[in-house]
Length: 102
Image (cartoon, rainbow, N blue to C red; front, side):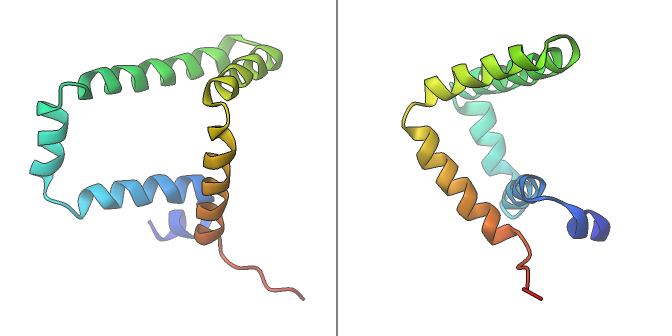
């Protein structure tokens, strides 16, 4: 974990932060969310399908097809792409080590 922490880029640190958030709470909270929330299964299924599509695209599609699918997602996000992009930039700046000028 020390090596991972030292080398992890901001996206990995974000994922580890989300994992730590879950681990700081009682497991029963997340069990209840996943077990008793009627929409949880659908969300897990969509996440799984999205990861499967990404895996498939990287295995057989071209860079152009990949870009086309990313553009479709960007259109779907609409104006929120800027909002979430700015949020991500602020988060990554927080998670990145500060660099001192020489």
